[in-house]
Image (cartoon, one colour):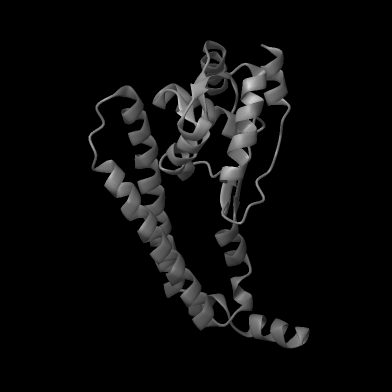
Length: 212
């Protein structure tokens, strides 16, 4: 294992951005590997091109704000996992994955156990939903169901595209997982909305009254 790999293993962070409502926190910060993988898949890219590629692909399974990507690219250059190959429009730096970067990506996939803990704000709110009025609880779950339907429509559009290469077939597997999860979430949210009147009641009203 290289010194750079050890450094990544020891770099543990958490995502505290508002947009990341349900994220996995890996012992190794997966943003690094996502960027290496995108460069391996897409070929040389500028930072701007990578943010766009991230938004339309990896961002569905690993959220990152654009401000995180540029500093990460500099760290990956220092680690030897990517290198600058030239400049793009307006002098933007263009990056490419190195053999060491590809090897690091393979090591991460095959040797590092994924973290499986999650942070899900929707479920955290659901845990305390008995404290609100039944109508508010029902509205909350219905909003979530609609949001899941919008996300499902996006993934189903991706699923309709032909997957003719190994990289596209791998992407199709993640899309399939997302579709199945979203369908389950829609079913759950609709079921929760139908049960909203049973989730709140005297206990919730009594506790709200006591807090006044």
